[in-house]
Length: 81
Image (cartoon, rainbow, N blue to C red; front, side):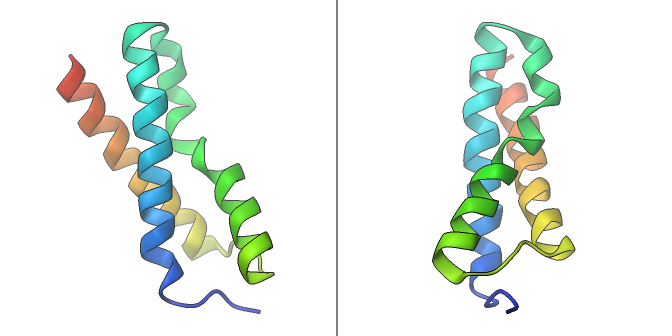
């Protein structure tokens, strides 16, 4: 079934947290990881939504997860540089 509306803000936060962690590592170790940071939360989000809600990520949920991750990647990179 469709995801409940209250899950979308959580996906934004999940994407942001995952991307911020990877960006922090990238800033210290290997900057090429920045390319993976905005997408890193998708596998975790997919597993969580499948397990908790027995649903799949729709395009909107994927977009909101990547949006949160992109914002967090930029903010973390600017903060650490």
